[in-house]
Image 1 (cartoon, rainbow, N blue to C red):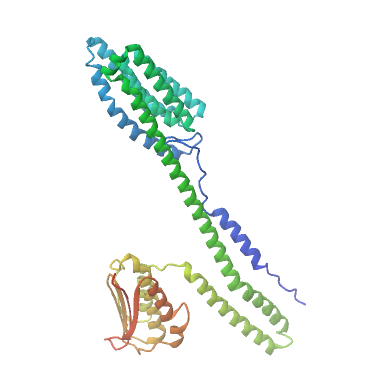
Image 2: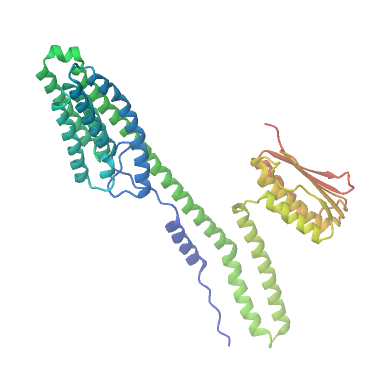
Length: 412
């Protein structure tokens, strides 16, 4: 006796597909620690570093533009030319250190970044001995640079508080009256404003990151669910049919020598079940496919030429609006198929505008009833697709003497 063929349960195939689908689905990004818009966490990818670098330099150059006022103030403080030149060179060194210090931080740990920040802060502090009290305005750059280091807000907050305290000490050392007259006393206020801005943008960036993570997770779950649904559809469509086909094929093989008539009956059932499974599969996948209008025009031209039918078709589908191109492709495919199968036409004309597609022939004008009533196919399926995008499907007699099929998007 022939050994019965065994089939793996379709549920196992479904589960396997679901697991693989989950593994291949896009995964949500992990939420990063609180950081400022230009901050890049240690261990970040090259793409993250590239984004952080672009954000840093665009903001840092803008901050340096304000330092032009610092240079102007230095050259108008009444000191000698030599002192002005030396102060300008010292400021240029600090500005360069501020601008390019992040290049030393991209791939360092938090501790390494703090060391680099401390070096820039020390350089800014030494400017007091070269530039004088006006150097405290450059300390705003240290506050901004601390935002790059911040993997936690308290790091930048501590730096801002330390700068404010140092600025008050400088103002106290120069005397309150002189500090007010020279504007030095307002430096702490500006520093606090910079710190508050950093906090605001940091919170905003954190919210954007969390939103991005949520969107990635929603996308991942949607992909997993869609793949699981598709697996269930395949199970429902093919599971039973293929099992019966295998059993009947086995039975027919055993009966072919014993009872040929019954074996033939079993094979007829196999053919019927196979066709039903194929139709079910087509219905299942119809919702996962998008037709391309340009490709359908090429296919229609080739099919009509092979049938010896004189065809007039647009060269491409560029004239159609984007929101109806897929619908027009489906209508063109179905219309040309009906012409080849049922119309016995010698001439076909396809007209395409931005909102309408018309297919006309000079055939019998008769459309097989089964094509019009099969769900998901024929005119009924086309009308459902048309309704989904706000279009109307109409049929009638063509001025060529045959059948006319027209779909047109409704006015909005």
